[in-house]
Amino acid sequence: MQEDTEYQIVEITEQPIALCQLLKIANMVGGGGEAKIVISEGYVLLNNEVEYQKRKKVFDGDIIEFNGDTIQIRLVQAEAVSEPEAKGPKKTQQPSHPKKKSSKKTVEPEIHQGRKRRPISF
Image 1 (tube, helix red, strand yellow):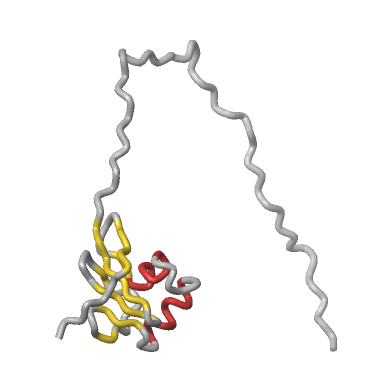
Image 2: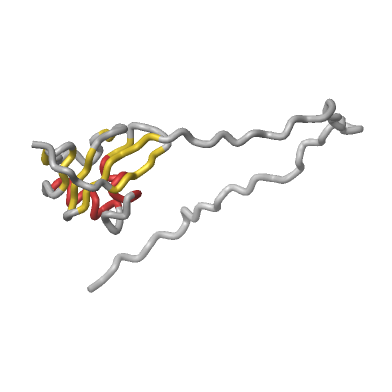
């Protein structure tokens, strides 16, 4: 029996994604800690089955139900950011003289071994 249910679509750019992270992305929970609690207590359904694994891998097409809300996962391709092409060879400047080693001295922490602590009295 297939129900005609309206799904909210959540688009992800890479799969798999952990179930607890997905609940945060979909704004179904307030934070990661809350997501882990509701999953471990059995309030989340993954493909119509109760899921107890917090880091369960979720893939494209999976259906998640929680607190009366139903979402479906859809994988989308991330938009590639194209870099502008260089118009000519880049010139790199060579330093006229080699770099000198820094003359900073490393400071070692002082250890006071001469003083002993007094015992605490109550």
